[in-house]
Every structure is written in C-alpha cells, then in structure tokens.
Image (cartoon, rainbow, N blue to C red; front, top):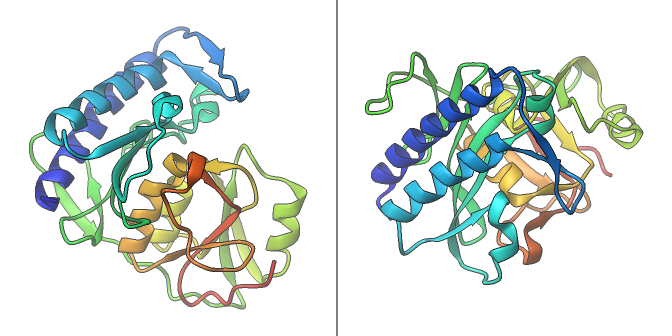
Length: 265
C-alpha cells in the first residue's frame, strides 16, 4: 500500500464529501428516511457515500471497500480493506447539532492502521500521516495541499481526576454506572467519532461505549486514537477491538489513554 497516496486521497475525499454534506445541512429542509435497522438516513449520507466510493475505487481498485450505505453488498471478508462511514452522527446532522463526521479508514489484518475523521460543521480535521502518526490540521482546508499540522498525543491521565467523554445520542444507565466506577473530574458529551478524537488530542481520558456500533462507525477514529498513543479494547474482556468481523458489528468497547486504569465490566 502506498500510504502517502492513501492519506492524500482519503483527506481530499473527506473534504469533498464534507462540502456536499454542508450544502445539504445548510438548506432550508432535507428529507429523512428510516433504514431497515430503524436508523435514520438522509440525502447527505448517500451523496457523501457516492463521492467517497467513486474516489476510492478509482484510486485503489484492487482494495476491498466497505461502506455503511452499501453494507448489504459486503459478503466477502478481506484481510485488507477500506471502510467508510460517509456521515457518522446522522442524528446530530438531523438536529443540526454539528457533531457529525466523515470517516474513512484502512484496515490491515484486523487493525485500523490509517484513518481520517473530518467534522465539516466544526471545522476540525484529524488524520494519520503516512507512517500512522495522528495529526490535527488547522483550516482553512485546501483539497490539494495539507495545511498547518499539530501532532496529537493522548493525555497523561490522572486516575484521581479523569475527563470522560460520552455519547450525546446514546447515553444510558449502563454507561453511567460504568463511568461511576472511576474518579471523574469532569464529563463532556460529543457525537459521532469525535469522541475518539477528543481522547486522541488529550481533551478526554476515557470514552466507554456500551451500545451498538458498526466497524465503519469506529475504524477511522480508532486509527486516529491509535496514532496518538491510545487504545480501544473490548468491554467484556479488555482485549483489543478488532476489525473484519462477520457482519461488521462491534461489541461494547472502551477507548482510553494508556495511563487510565481500566475497571472491570
């Protein structure tokens, strides 16, 4: 894999998809449909998927591609594949809360090794460089050239005063009960894969997710967090979260900085 080319292409496609998403987001109204799993989908999801899928297939025709909007067609398992959530945080998009992202990642042998997370309404761009290190780019964003970069690194966590980030749309009692096992200094809520990025930048120490997610929801954020020195573990046995699972469904998981002393489930 030509990682330098991959990073350039993923970043450009994320920006192109983000532009189209924002056109729809800023319109007076947009249609919302419900998929077979009862999750919402908008024209922005499909438009972004079209842009990213076409771009990745043109540039990397020999690499398997998995996207949320084409999930039903993915029947073969591959060791190396690209995985896309063209609009993560559709509920945030619908309610115009801004916490939605474009996610594109590369998975190799069960691990997300490169990824880009772009939050167009927030103007934040996070990605891994060609060697896998996590960077945040400061806008304005030029599609053809990378701007000013800041290296990302997880926090040196104080287990007596942890910062926890949790989902805006999927918070429940089980999550609160688990968070209650820690000494928490403060909490913040965020939507979509931004939660991984907040741990990666050191703005949070811990992100537990005790709810349903799919691999396309997490792969890009996981790659960015890994590139900043963080980890993502299964909630049940605290082994690493892996990818390429049958059906692409994730178990519950915990994303965290390495100094955090994980509590048992």
